[in-house]
Every structure is written in structure tokens, then in C-alpha cells.
Length: 92
Length: 219
Length: 226
Image 1 (cartoon, each protein chain N blue to C red):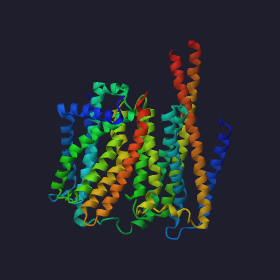
Image 2: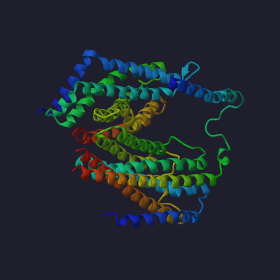
Image 3: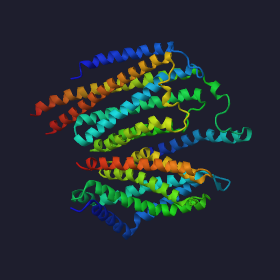
């Protein structure tokens, strides 16, 4: 019972979120004819420093995030090995 | 084993990585693109590291398929994971640069498309290993071989087709001031990749030990 | 021990005989391919007519999607009848087993394409058969490339968990270059001065075929054995 209520509510929520997306489209067609390719002036809107900063920041985060993830998985496995290897001699 | 070299490599790699931004800042600006071109040093170096990771995975896979030794399989999975991670970096830093240099985030030219495809293949490798159940290591090895076969295709794609992406000839003809930082970054990333591969294969080895222990404990 | 060609023809004949009884895979794949064309066509329709360049893309998407379905069904049949074990025990070369299954799939896909290609040509007013030999060459080379990888993966996934979703997950990234070459070759063929380009794409397709078939033959045995 509760699950179906949850599902119905989620669907309604998603629909309400989608409404603004649909609402914008007719306005765009009335006022502005879309240009194929990039609109002129797009290159000037985002500052280069921000792009460079995001790029380098992303690289650091991903690399160190991954290295950290491997390290933590490794220590978790090593801890498990310790506990299980204690069980094995006990069984025997 | 290799445990003695490992801390040394980590320190060296970390030091190189920490020093690299200073070298990059000191390097000359590129004439047309200005500051945003500085992404190149890490982006292109990561591209090379991605090829290395893909090769490691492919060679490990071939070794595993034909010799069945688990050490090859560990190499294969470590290489595949690293290919996905570095590939993600390449596919994100490239568009960040492209937005300024070309005016678009993405273009379906030969280099970008083939890189994305290769990245997807190694993602598929990881999905198969994770959700394929028993015996999926061998099947995934076949996938990695196809992935590795893509590497020359991705590399040569810029030279064969007309692409927005710069050709490979850009590297040998770099300005003198850029060469030092670039090759330094390449070395840093290759070293870092080796460090991570060693760590990841160690993790896989311990996991296999753990599985063996669990089996022994059940007896 | 039967020779290579003998083993291949035995396997092909077996598959065709089994299929001929029910024609299940043929009809369902054909219907699915046609449905694909329709679904994608509607995505590209403007004022009642389809966008002119869409024909080549839609054709190859339909081939790829229906091919994946056919592969899945063909090997599901093997798995269901447990004939795979019998085939693996049989005293034939593993490569012969692979080639036999591949030829069977190719025949099936050729039959589907024989219907879908004229259909696309008609519905999109695309003169696909103005240069019939080149078109058939593109179709053949593209289908071989796709099926070569598909047969390997469908066979190896037979005992895998989640095999139904794994096949597309593995197959599409690897065969995207083949599909791209097929689409661009067909599109070039439809252009006025596109013939040299179309032939270049055909050459690329043949190169892919050689690489894929070689890789598949090389890996089939270790991947299928315990």
C-alpha cells in the first residue's frame, strides 16, 4: 500500500518538475529563431581562468579520489583477511 | 616484492605532481588561445596515460586468456579501471578547453568520438566483471582486447580524418618553452599511473586471497 | 574428424533447419527491424516528410538493433536446448564452431536486410540502389563486422548472469565504428559526388571486418573453454 502511494507521489513530482521545461519552448519559437551552431559571443561569456581552474581541480579530485578509494578498499580487505584467517585455524 | 620501491615511487610522483603547476605557470602562453591552452599539459599527458592503461589492460587480458594466470587478470582489471578514470579526466578537461578554443563543448569528430567509444568499451568491461557473475573475468578479457585494439585507431584518427582536434604532429613541434613542462607532466602522469596500477593490483591480489580464505573457512 | 568447411556447413545446415521449422527468429527480427524504422522515422519527420539525411542512419540503427535481438534469440535457443555443450564436445575445431554460427547469423541478417533496405529506400525516397553493388558491399561488410563481434559475445555470454542486458552493453561500444562507417558510407553513396567517399568507407569496413574476425577467432577458444 505505502509503496504504491510513494510511486504515485514520485510520478506527480516528476511531472511538476517537467512542466517548466515544456513551458519555455513555445516562447523560444515565437521570439528568437535559433541559430545553427553556437550563438555568437558564447566564447566570451565563460572566463578562461574558471575553465582552467575547473579542469585542474577536477583532475586533482578524480585522481586523489580514486587513489584514496583504492587505499581504503585495500585496508578494508586486509582487515577482513585478518578476521577470516583467525577463523580458519580455529575450525581446523 | 615491489613493496620497497612503492613508497619511493609514491613520493616521487607526488612531488612531480606538486611541482608541475609551477612549471605550467612559467611556460609561455600560446598565441591564439591564451590561458585556456594551459589545460593542454594535463589533458594531453592524461591522454597518453590512458593509452598506457588500455594497453596494460589488453596485455593482461591476453595473458590471462592464454595462460590463465591470475596475475594477468589483476593487471587487466587494474588497467581497465585506470582507463576509465583517466578517460573521464580526458573527456572532461578536453571540452572545458574546447569551449574556449572551438566555441563548442563537444564535436563529433573522429578523435572525440573514438575516444568516447574506447572509454565506453572499458566501462562495459567493468560492468561485465561486476554484474556478470562467475567466470566473467575471462569474458571481460575478450572485451578488453577489443578495447586495446581501439588505441591505435584513436591515436591515428586525428591524422587520417579532418578533425577539430589538433593532430599528433603538434607534440614534436611544440614551442621550446612548452616542451619541458609538457614532458615533465607526461612523466608525472605515467609515474602516477604506475603507482596506481601497483596499488590496484595489490588490492585485487588481496581480494583473491580473501576469497580463497573464505572458501577454506567453509570447509 | 570432419574438415573445417565440413564442420561449418554442418552447423549452418543445423541452424537453418531448426529455424526453417518455426521461422520464429526470422519473423520476430524482421518485425522488430520494421518497427525500428518506423519509430526512428517518426523522430525525424518534419511536415509529413522525413528529413532527407535520416535514411542511412535509420537503416543502420535498425540493422544494429534487430541484429542484437537476433543474436540473443539464436543463442538463447542453443542454451535452452543445451546444444552448446554438445557442440563444444564434438570433435570439431572451435574456430569452425564460431564460423558456423557466424554464417548462420549472417544468413538471417541478410534475409532481414533484404526486406528492410528496399523499405527504407521507398519510405525515405532514398535511391539506395542506384549503385547497387556498392550498397550491397557496404551492407555485407557492415553486417559481417557487426555479426563477427556479436557472435563472439553472444556465445560467450550464454552462461553469464544478466546476459540479456550485457549483450547490448558490450556489443554497441565495440561495433559503433562499424555502424558509423556503414552510415557514412551509405550517406556518401546517396550524395551526388559521394562515390569515392563511399568506397573509402567500404575499405574501412573491410579493414574492421578483418580485425574483428581475427580477434574473434583468436579469443573464441579460450573464452568458451572452462
